[in-house]
Amino acid sequence: MPYPKEYRYTREHEWVKVEAGKARVGITDHAQHELGDVVYVELPQVGKRVKQHEECATVESVKAVSPIYAPLSGEIVAVNKELEQKPELINQSPHDQGWIVVLAMSHPQEMDNLLTSEEYEQHVGGSH
Image 1 (spheres, one colour):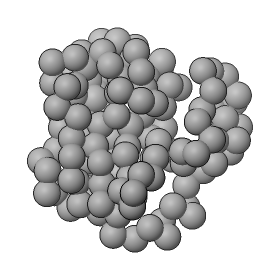
Image 2 (cartoon, one colour):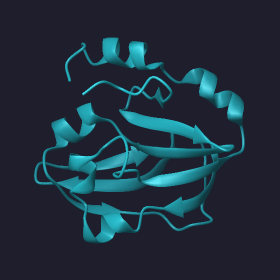
Image 3 (cartoon, one colour):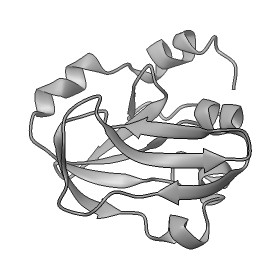
Image 4 (tube, one colour):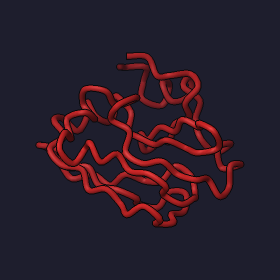
């Protein structure tokens, strides 16, 4: 699965897609593959403020419980409630329907700290 070029990525395997000044966040295909079948997602409260690299959600799979880190600072303005009933969306559609939160960015310049799709692919060794 190619990593979308318009997204930005963290070394901890989160992705960011900026839409109308807000940042949609999820985990990458590489991350969901490493985790295995996702069985539960603990979503944060809408309105919570997070700092870049701060834990903002938790994904539980058959293998492990993994923190999800905020790739950018901001306020959580939406969470993917569908994941409460269908956590497997993270496995089935990690870069689209399996999004986790939407942030109102407080420091858009933090995007400069994130990896491009090419840099991320090199980071994970080019394996999909």
